[in-house]
Image 1 (spheres, rainbow, N blue to C red):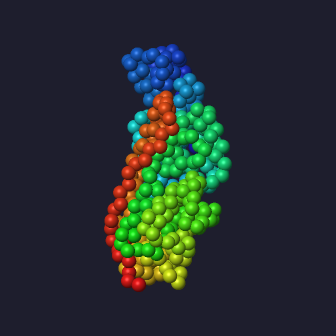
Image 2 (tube, rainbow, N blue to C red):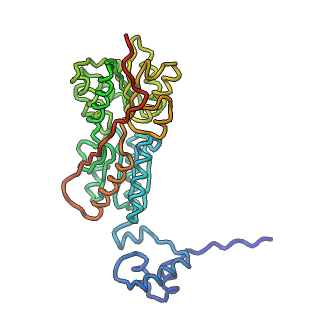
Image 3 (cartoon, one colour):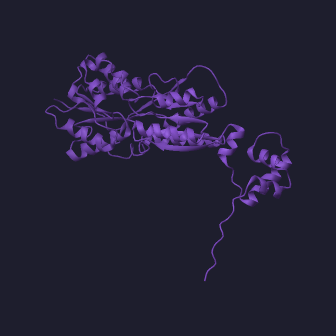
Length: 363
């Protein structure tokens, strides 16, 4: 008959103190990184903790130090290459400063965002990076900020929420991308976006009036940039070429298929993110449409696959890793007590020309 395995006891601060031959108070200061402790004593305590397999109680330590050395990151779609790369920038920067990261994914759903923010504040994170989902009440963010917990919004801003933001100038980037297509003779230009029926309703107003006020996502700003370039060129926007079908690759594919089935399909498509671009690629391939001979395609985000597909994708490249780094640095500065006005940091984009954009086909 085999012997039962005794559960391993969890080492406490008292155990570490006895092992190191110091008082419990001294051991607690050495392990917690606060107060005055001689370096030789700190090394003695840490060596004892290592021998005993001591693991700090982060929440208990936070009651003393006021910090858990953790950051909460709430992202809207971790499958999107933009957010994956931004997260890497956040995590690398946080860990270099002795912080760890807790991650939540909301699938662009506000109720999941509210739950994630609540859980992370209950775990006493020192600050939050949030990519807000679309629409709805923002009371949960306002309450966190009012409680003194620093919040940085990633990629998007929210009307009425006084928080730092880090991203790009989406309106300018979309205007330049649209101008790139116009310069190649395209006039029947479609946009394939993420979003909701409410967003589409606003985008379909005459001349896309007020589209820049579309809620939290980047859709409104990019649609406004598209509208600005078309208006400056004196080109009428065809409402049937405006789409807003959802955030998944499958949504982009479905919307592109709808566009290609029109009696007068577009000669160029501007996709608003990497997932929409990938969906558009699938739709073009399935329909046997040549790119760029029949339809040119230009997308946002220089995803890992963008330069290996055929044809290679022309993109508006965002400095996604650097956006994550900047967001984390701004958050850490607020945690350390940096005051001042709310900051809105905008990093530059680059238009990378590849083979998916060509001149408009002869009519």
